[in-house]
Length: 338
Image (cartoon, rainbow, N blue to C red):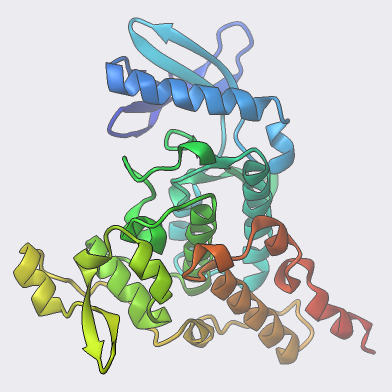
């Protein structure tokens, strides 16, 4: 063991060297308690399935082996560089759109493969996207940490699902969910790269859904009717012969729960189109302001499709990979211009 790379609720990740080969690896060390052992076994099952699919080709971390040492469960992975979160901190602001494209393409490719295998990652966030080696392979990334992953057939809101900032409306509301929750998380990540700030930094689930609805409007009435936790954040108001859901005002929510709503947004948007007001950069390799603006608006359009409130209407990974922002079809006219 050489150094501690990180620690969490269930264990630690340590940088190690294999004595026989001098190969550097990362070992996830988990305490062998009953619940942790069950979670670890589920992760090992999914990693074993992914390893059979040549994970390098779809940008997922490679797992080499698993073993038990002094009653500690050890999962051995390839050594990667830094997390996207750490890279974002080092950049210190929004990414040029040209840097966002390879990241979203690679993660989109990973999500397409996971969807084909019926796997939900369930915890996609900047910490769980790693740069492989930013010196030799700039902006090459891989998706890591399948500790919360599950198969679609096991999709139930019975445990931790998604970090709050990247949590989809269906998880907050208790609505039936599938792998589309990962696409929501990716949309939040791309918006964060685009603006340099967390899009929806809620201090509670109420704040999270409040930020979402203040920017994007209310989810479909049918979705609110079917969800099991709608009543925690919304109340019905009667209009003539109809009744509609309305978000509880902050004072009412605080009175009911004792949880004080907090405003933590750096930027408060009235709609997602407002994102374009933030990322205004000069990209010298682009041939003119029209190209830059066209690229920016295509990125905003993709973010809007990833952040569609109703999961059934949200863009799929395959459709994401054919979106003009990814294919750069909108730039062909300019490349052919004299």
